[in-house]
Length: 137
Image 1: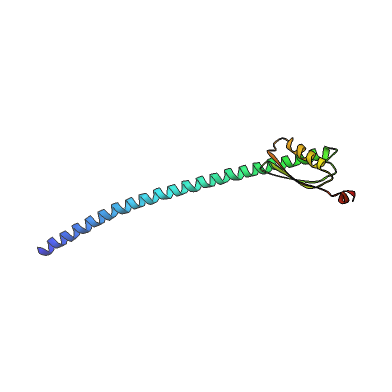
Image 2: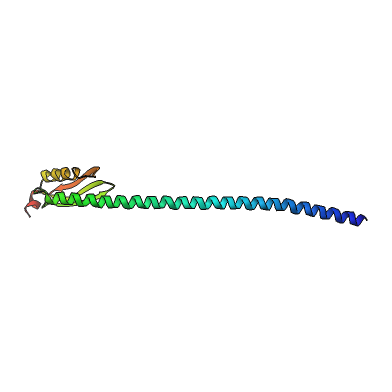
């Protein structure tokens, strides 16, 4: 009979242990699924942000290309600047003018034309006036 009591106690202890472990495992699995769900949600959100940034970057690049084309057209159509060696770049609607021009008047005119172009936020004038000996060549 002593052995039967021991056996019953062991079975009860084993049953309690398994029930407790089962609850802990269920809770752990539930937490794991919740964390996995949050990770998937965060990954989806990050991917969404990446798409938005890529779209805005592409849109900005397209706008910059259009601004560059408009400034180059304005420089080419102007009698004072059309023969100048003026290079135009645009980044985030900021136009940079580079190259060599015959006079400060040409440099100022080029800057004015760029500033008057739609979409331009600012103009960085990096034009250099040719020396008199270079202008003759």
